Amino acid sequence: MSFKNENIEDYKDIWVFCEQRDGKIVDTDIELISEGRKLANERGARLVGLLLGKEGIAEHVKELGGYGADIVYVVEDERLDVYTTDAYTKVICDIIDDKKPEVFLVGASTIGRDLAPRVAARLHTGLCADCTHLDINMEQYSAFLKEASSLNVEGLSLDMEDTNLKMTRPAFGGHMMATIICPRFRPCMATVRPGVLKRGEYDQTAEQKVIVEKLACNLEKEDLRTKVLQVVKETRKMVDLIGAEVIVSVGNGISKDPSLGISLAEELVDALGGGVVGASRAVTDAGWLTADHQVGQTGKTVRPRIYVALGICGAIQHKAGMEDSEVIIAVNNNEDAPIFETADYGLVGDLFEVVPALISELNSAKQ
Ligand SMILES: Cc1cc2nc3c(=O)[nH]c(=O)nc-3n(C[C@H](O)[C@H](O)[C@H](O)COP(=O)(O)OP(=O)(O)OC[C@H]3O[C@@H](n4cnc5c(N)ncnc54)[C@H](O)[C@@H]3O)c2cc1C
Image 1: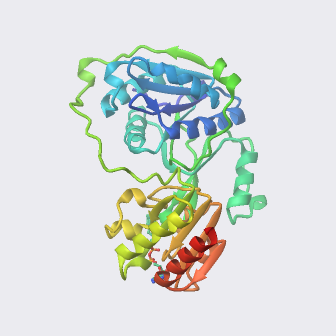
Image 2 (image 1 turned 90 degrees about the horizontal axis):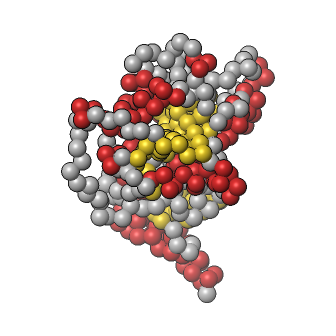
Image 3 (image 1 turned 30 degrees about the horizontal axis):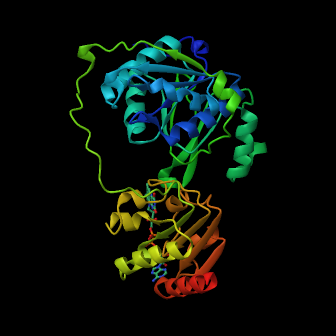
């Protein structure tokens, strides 16, 4: 395939890869379509969803329309029911070569993290992985810098006419944020972390207006080097951090007695009316809780109503995943712990003493 650095003005529209599992679109698709709508409006472009799956998958396109897609391209084929790198890459690269999108967004799920680099490499274009913020319009981008950075934005000589996608992501282990552009190649590709972007309002009229176009599947036998024999699902139920209203997370502060620390967190969750237990990376690395509990830069990004941090120091990589929570309560025996800079309520003390007292207060208040 040729490099996409000639006639880049031929590349138009904002595209979103709409991932499906078991024939159902995933939550990240809605977050990406909502964000894609915003970007398409900024660019004066159309928002296009790309959905691959088996026969019948097209029935989901109305929902994508309701969240803002103008067009959804659908490729239906039995060989696209379960994701495989080679089949999806081939089909997507051929469509991109033909239709020429300016921007191609992919969710940073396990599938997206596998697919996006392969597609980018084959198309010879740039990919910015794990983005947490996207802009096209320079006014919007400057407003974001003013709000979210310590830069003197007025003092910067920004090109206010720039229409490249600005892709912002944590860099250097979360110690700084970097904004990356891809000015010479198209499409400009980004993966976005699940849970970071907000879903927009559902629009019933837009649902009716979405255009669905079915595209042919051009896979040949020699394109497929892998065959899925069987899909074995993990029987253990994964913790649903992203959907939880209340999260009580434990950190290395439970190291004196990890199982007691975890059961105290579970009891506190119940006392707060139900939710889930999360963890810092120190806890998942130690194997006290499984990786699906991890909150932070390399874990999940959460925005619950109540986030309680028990024995968590508040490293920047942890904060990156929870600082947008509505109310943050921290318990730590070190009054100088950085978590207190982010917390709305802070309790200085030993969590093994503070948490039982909290639970009993909450339970008696309920009675
Ligand atoms: C590239 C990269 C990505 C990372 N991604 C993540 C991520 O996604 N999520 C994440 O969490 N981390 C992540 N980390 C690790 C992060 O930098 C920290 O090392 C980690 O968050 C520390 O976990 P902690 O706060 O539980 O442990 P510690 O740093 O050991 O802090 C424990 C805290 O508990 C307090 N404490 C101790 N005993 C008690 C007690 N009895 N009662 C009350 N308080 C007590 C201590 O004062 C301390 O503040 C990442 C690091 C890197 C480099």
